[in-house]
Image (cartoon, rainbow, N blue to C red):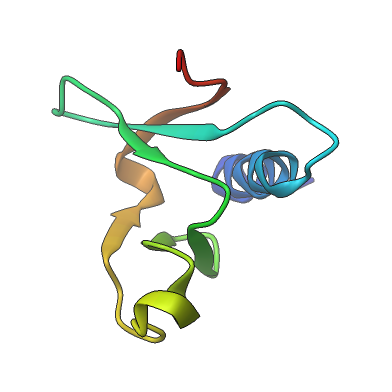
Length: 91
């Protein structure tokens, strides 16, 4: 049975896949972090990477266009992430 950390990381990976799948109508992944009142908001063009089940790394995308490959923009220890949410923006 997976640990709680591994299960949470798997769920976030699943949400990222849905965010980047054009078959679904999601255009935001909201990341809620302990101690921060508002979520961090990322879109389908952003690049997501995991360091095991401990860190979520997000780069403003598309990284090739912005020429910021390999430069972490946002690093979230998953133990500090209290929730993630897929959403459609209100535009």
